[in-house]
Length: 223
Image (cartoon, rainbow, N blue to C red; front, side, top):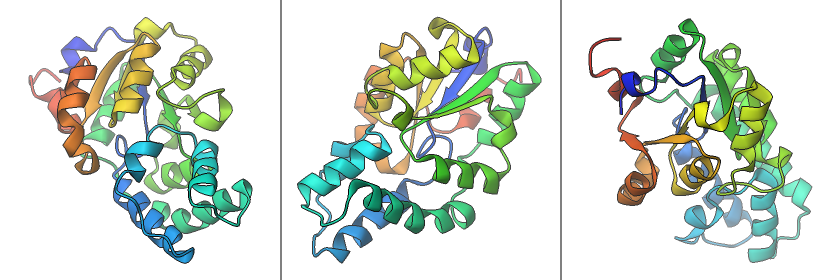
């Protein structure tokens, strides 16, 4: 996949964690630490099971599966407190992401974020990285009826941007997100991430194209 193949798109839509920013390591750390508070180890299947769930859906799942003596809102508040400092100081942009954002803005391509994360955390990382101004629309999965792999969040971002789904390119790092973009009728590019390397074949099969980093989009040398 190169920019030549995407040049006619009117909007680029991005997942956040693991796609636009290198943050999946942080969530694994938080899961281990948080469950440890309640005497639980972190199951091997946890990340895949909650993949694509909204922030609220994930908190509901944790409360039920691990029988946590915390309300859903308290669980979400705990996670926000644990993550904000890391988002502000330790989470970088993925390689080439800044170059792609500048390229798209210079060409009038609209950009939006469709994330399963909570809004406080999104605002924290966008502010810390200084990239908030690139995005016309930021939507969290808590704002729609169902999280990924349902297409709701991507359809909402496209509608709010005023573009048709077929005119959108989606960048995603996990199968649930790729499925969501495809179900919305959009072109989907799978982005490699260390924490989903074991799903590389599935991602490539589901998506319209796959990149190791955003720099791959520029490899034809015309941009």
